View 1 (tube, rainbow, N blue to C red):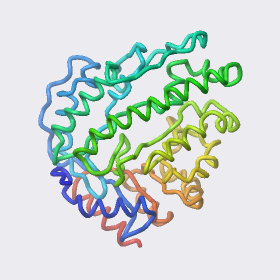
View 2 (cartoon, one colour):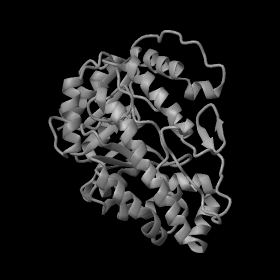
View 3 (cartoon, rainbow, N blue to C red):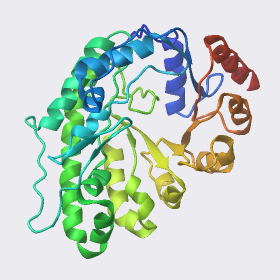
View 4 (cartoon, rainbow, N blue to C red):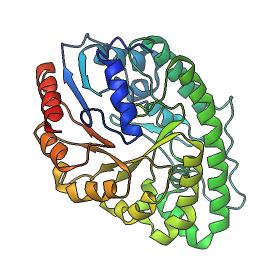
Length: 349
């Protein structure tokens, strides 16, 4: 596979493969993108819906941005396809500057919701149109990522409403589990369809998280609703889904988002199919090196870690953490600064 916008792809690929295998070549993985030139102008979208769902605009915007960026170290030019949230089972969709969201549509369990997704689903069709166009434009230059499709437990929470979802765990557990089972079955169907589109042209897989995986079945998993439930409820309702998805997938990074999610960390660390934890502190919380003890805890459990740091924090993290299974996301003000940081990291080991 060639990537014209990724100058050192063969070298980067070897280091990323080492990350997934918890091995080390000469330094941990460092993703260090930097501005290289002014991006060519792309006409602005007429509205937010166009921004996220118009195939030509989405593909052209990424192509222009990636062409102007220096992808230092293990940085990979990829996409974050928000159009994945259009897979909504008919729920009303709202488009905003930074995201897409859906309105709840499950008002009652009597009758149970008929959540069907097939090739005629308009949301799935729109997702596939954007993926197809990105693959056309990206061929030989950058990577089209698996679109941002809700994980089943979070999707049911969206379609039901978070508060109602939590109450259903007590009042309607069987109905809730049957609904989650249906959405999980649908998720596998959708993954196969879109995954086949991506792997036909590209090697490996990448998601919104810019960490390439050498294996074809890869996903960044998460459970936002888990922040609102107890470890016992997590064990009953969320953990079985995660374990089944991990058994299906080849490579998994778990997106752990916010301090309220830390109550489930030990359970997540016990799941063999989770290769690495990606920690996001959440708005208003300390960032970066403030969580060194947490990173060490994750590494001590035999898991990799993916962390976002400021440029001037990277050297400290490389000194303080095990290099095996460590993937640091940062950025640099210039290509020269990116390469200087990479050289410093290699000199530490």
